[in-house]
Image (cartoon, rainbow, N blue to C red; front, side, top):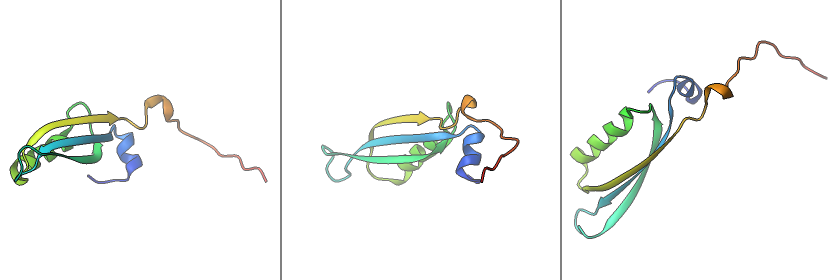
Length: 89
């Protein structure tokens, strides 16, 4: 992902936060949690699903549950183009 956070937000990205509940590899009855956060595109969430695929192939702790939320930080009605600036001394 390239560009500043503002550029990403203007392109439609939003902040996605996911909580992964997983079983400890050596103690299957023990659940642990991991919080992941990145800018992603709703409704397909390509970065989130790529991370889930990475987890399933590379990390030994099997996933029990995944909860996530997505917040678009800049909405169309919150952005306006400023054409001029007036300075007061």
